[in-house]
Image 1 (cartoon, each protein chain N blue to C red):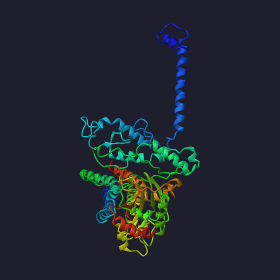
Image 2 (cartoon, each protein chain N blue to C red):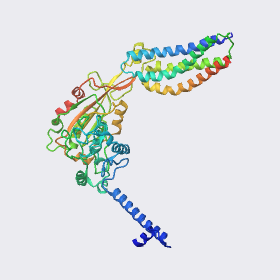
Image 3 (cartoon, rainbow over the protein chains, first blue to last red):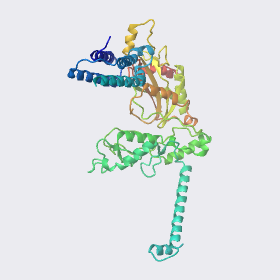
Image 4 (cartoon, rainbow over the protein chains, first blue to last red):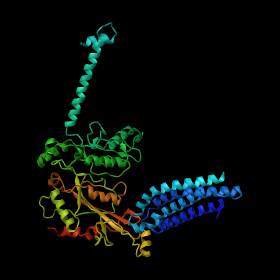
Length: 138
Length: 397
C-alpha cells in the first residue's frame, strides 16, 4: 500500500492529538477532583511536553490546506520513523500519568524523572517529523 | 633619616640620596603598617569574638562583632548604604529616623535605627540571640574546661554581648515608646564544655499547623531546682513512653528545642497503629487489579496525615515566619539534630520565664505528593493528648 502525504500527515496528527487529549483529560480530572494535587506543577510538566509538537503539526496542516497541491508520495522510511517515534513519545508521556498509582511513588517525583527521557525522545521525534515534512514539501 | 631630609626631598631640592632615603622611609612605614595588621589579625584570631567556621562579623555598625553568615553581613552593608533613602525625608512621628512605610528599625543594637524590612529585623534579632553560640570558645573550655569554666566564660560573654531584642512587634513604623531598648538578657544556647554546638533550629520557626503552650507545672513539678537537663529528661521520658524513640535537639534563641521524627496519625490525631514511622504510600495492586483503589490513588484520595512535633523551650516570644516547611525538610530535622543536650546547657537552671511551646507540623502525604496542612485538622491539645504525651506528663510526679 502506498501512503500519500495527506494520509501521513493525518496519521501523525492523530497520534499526537489523541495522546495529548488523554493526558489533558487525566490532568483535568486530577486538577478538578483532587484536593492534594498541585495543578501548577502538573500543567507546567504537560504543556511544554506537547505544545511545541502540536503547533508544528497544526502549522503543517494549515499550510498544506492553503497550498491545495496535488497529493504527493512520501518517503516511507522517514514516515515510519516519525510515526513510531511519535507513538513512543506519547506512550512515555502517558506512562507516569497513568501508572503512578501502581508504583507507590508520588506523582510529582515521577513527572520530574520523566522529564529526562521525554526531553530526549521529544527532540528526536520533532526532528524527524520536521525532516519528513520539509523533505516532502520541496 | 631625619624629617628635615624628607622635607628637603619633598620641595625638590637637588639631593643625590633623596630617592634612596625616600624609598627607605616609605619602606619603613609600610613595614610598620604590616606589623600593625599582623598584630591586629593575631589579636582578632586569639580574641573571644572570633566566629566559628562559616560565620563572619556582621559589622552593621562599628564594633558589631555578632557572628552571622556572609550573606547576612552583605545584607547589613547594603542596608547601611540604603539607610538614607529609606528614611522619611521630612522626619515623622519618631523624629528624623522615622522610616518610610514598609520599613522598620533594624535594632542590631538599641540605637541602631537603620531602616530595613521586617524580615531583616527578625533575622537581626535572631542573630543577636544566637551570638554567643556562634563564637569560638576559649581554649580551656574547648579542651574540656568543664561547665564551671564555661559559666565563667559565659558571664564574660554576657557582659560584652550586644543586646538581644526579645520581642519583635510587627509594625510598619517603629515606635520608640512602644519598643523600649531591650534589656540585655543574653544566654548561652550551646555548650562550651565539649566543643560541641547544638545545630540551630530554623528561627523564627516556619509556619506551623497549630501550637500549644505547655503548663510549666507539667515540666518542673517535683523538681525544687529544675535545670534544662531535668526538664528535657522529663519530656524525653514522656515522649519515649509513647513510642518516640528518635529525638533531636536543636538550639533556639535563649533555649533549646526537641524535635520528634515524622509519624503517621489516624483520623483522631492518635499515632497510627500501622506504618506509624513510614511515609511510604502503599501502591495499588496490579494483580488482582482494584479499579476503586486505582481511581482513589489517581485522585490522591489514598493519603494519610502525618505530623512532626517540635517542643521549643525558650523565654523569647516568637511568631512563625517564612515559607511553609515541606515533609522532606521536617524529616531532615529528625536526622540532623543532636542526640542530647550538651552538658553545659543541660546543667543550666531552667529559667522561671522559660516557656515550652509545642509546635505541631501537620502534613498530608498521598500518591499526588505531600503538602503542609495549615491550619491543621486538630488543635495542639488534641494532638498532644491523642499522642499520649499530655497524659504521661500529667501522671509524672
